[in-house]
Image (tube, rainbow, N blue to C red):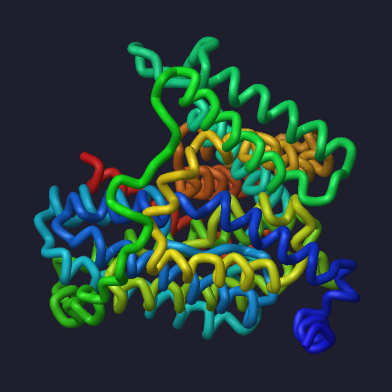
Length: 441
């Protein structure tokens, strides 16, 4: 059995083993498991039953991550995405007054078009449309984005009354975060195997101790540790309602957001982890996008917002994940929570904060390749990297990176450096920007 698994995922040629991949998969799961509780909380605001969304979230995460691992052979977790679930619940259902059954139908058609695009892209036009400098910008931007999530989760950085981000000041939570951060960083520097998982466990213990010291009592589960799965949302989507012309913009926004987010995450994680093929391109990118597209379609059928590749997958890559086996392990770890979801309440969000910040450091590795003297390359790189954490949106980083790259190259007489697919990406970015402005305002 061990030999067969090693052969299927080509562990030897990737310089890894089953134990390393299992640790990496467990680390990636711990960094992403929050979605099991957060996604139902968001979508229930739009009228979807909480328990049914939780079941859909678990099944979609397991299915999509295992598919990514087995088919695309990449260590990337796929699950219903944050931000796009807010778009689904608060903008499409509440503001636009689209019934949630019809919104799920929009998700299906977005996934179907996404899959069709990847199937037709036999010449890797989507990959070739993204120049190396923008790939480095995506990797760096995702690193800063992940780190900002960690700092905010710990309360180390908080929004001030003026609206800008500021220091959260020293308190029990930030001291716990700092202790966990230093402990995990020391383990990483000393190259201790499983350092990220050990760091998560140690920080969780510290957080529980802090809560006990503050008189909050030990963590408990008031409603019990068992919850039966609820499949009441299965096949509840409205397939034909979204074909009305008035709803095409919603399909377009879902499609563009899914495509851009998954493209940037796959490129960024592969660049940072040196998961590169013989041609110097991110490994199995086409297959990764197909797996994500099938995850979006599964999301619609099961009853949740679209699945996307998770930036927190970088935590597993930093732990040594090199193959799809780590994604399979992460996917399998979702399944028990069809029945044990209340146990997730025992793990404080603070536990993963130090790891997210340290993974941000790892994701900035490709910055050494930036040619700062070439401003027509450096400026789009800079916009792509810094706008992701500043706008709290991977999509915005891609939009402005693509637009600035195309405009600068064309304005400087270097149109020959802009492939046709990049012009298409820039046009898509502009259309998406217009649609996003419409939905936001």
